[in-house]
Image 1 (cartoon, one colour):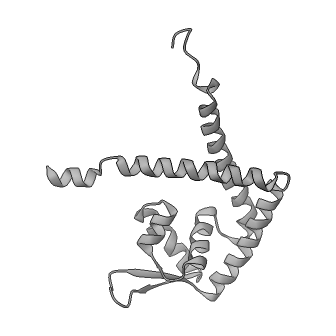
Image 2 (tube, rainbow, N blue to C red):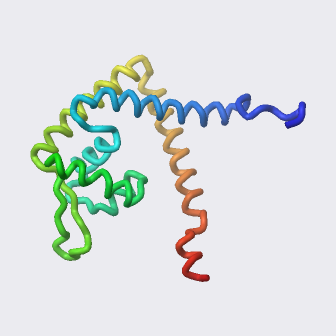
Image 3 (spheres, one colour):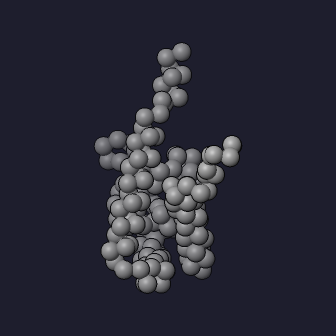
Amino acid sequence: MNKNQAFPWDHPRFRSWIGVGRACQLMQQAMGRAIADLGIKPPHLDILINLYRFDGISQQDLARKLLVGRSNMSMLLPQLEKRGLIERRADAKDKRVLRLSLTGTGRSLTEEAMAIQTGLIDRTLSQAPAERCLAVAEAMEDIIRILQTMESDEPDDSLLAKTR
């Protein structure tokens, strides 16, 4: 860098990017501590809440919603299944597709975890006016859209390999 170039950390967009990343890390840590007594971690909670909302979702659709690969799903789902929190069933029309649902125990634990999560969110953001919370949410949704668009614009390596 020469004397006339600004350092990246002096740029408002860089500061915003770092702030979002740090906030995300700290939120995950706080959530992890808050739900530790339930014997689950934030990635488990993400799965449980999505199954609470979308009963019978396919494994593939769940992975897409959570922005994770199938390998992550194949590591996390057996842990939840072994604890009796979820069940996997073959799709009635396509036996290759697995459908996911909460068990009664899983539903109860998820409701307890959601109450803990809501309490943490309320404590963390109670001083922020609703308008500011909505503005932050809209800014984050913009970032999500931009990053998803950038991801979809990148060439798919698997397609490149097929053409070679």
